[in-house]
Image 1 (cartoon, rainbow, N blue to C red):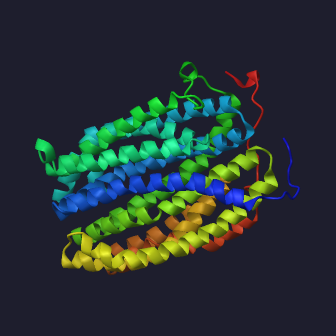
Image 2 (cartoon, rainbow, N blue to C red):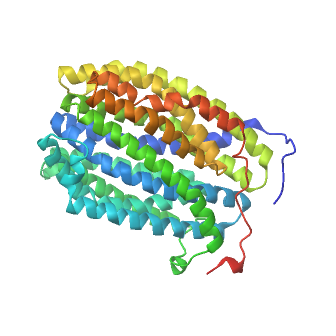
Image 3 (cartoon, helix red, strand yellow):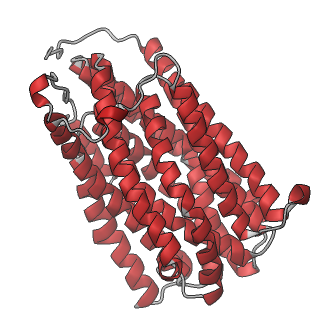
Length: 462
């Protein structure tokens, strides 16, 4: 392995160009994906508050599933970015196969749960019988999209790490536009179709996911793309599997802690009443839309840092990480200003009760300051640190900040001390802001400056 800790001259103009080329399509893709939830909220919000809230709560099942999938594909992306920097496409194909095996098996479990016991799933998030009834009907249809999504996400992840970011973003964008258009058709019954209301969002999502998968298969068939090795789909490379699991387990732990924690936030607010749940549903949509920029930067950071470290250019990778961490602060303060500026418009856009509207205003202001921590931590942890394989820290920080502080406070505030809704909501925002100093200390230890690749030999094959 080449050791390149010698100081190298970095062309920062080229750095920003590559950052933009990578981050812009990914941020746009993230924006388009978040737009689906926004469209669901706006369209169903024009039908009834109950349907909007029930679908938002039911979508938490998909959110939890995505936490598992995120760990499986992120482990592949971390190693894939480094092996791509090294120029080893065969190993990337083996990683592709691993991701498919894990994600499809996991998605079949969630699909079965949605078909067999949707009511039990909805009871986790709400007590209102009407919310449970509507959410159960949504899950029975939307569950079909989960397996399709698992396969397409593996394809899209491999496209990202092999410098096919633009096709990746275009595929997701087509799927999202299709989803939004189909939402309108099936929710309102346009063009002679029956008005399915909340069930229409599930039908639209399933069809859009199928379109996405078909496009992935077609685009990946082109020259220069890495495709699964179907004949070796169930064969295992022992050394590579060990590396994959070493990255995956901390990511899975972190994803579960974060995903279940975030779902717990939704469940806690959901049990404070329909008005609180409705306001939280809208604020969550806005949060996801605003986070698109930091998501794009974080993904680009992981690829750029990973490419340099995998190629043995460790000092260059370190300097890239330092610059990206500084950029995260700019994105964070910019996001805070944007949330505050959008608050009056958002509050007027959705049909809510007077109480829900009051809750939404307060939640938006609180969320504005939460965005600083969210952006800085996303880019630094999920981008730079993960790019160098430092995946354990995220799990530790979530265990302390979210599960040791934020969730207990929110639970006690909601069900023991009976705090006001906005005070409980503030507790759910403590984790990201509170762990910033810890994240900065970890970053400056530079344990993430590592080359994770290895030479692949025939002896590694089972």
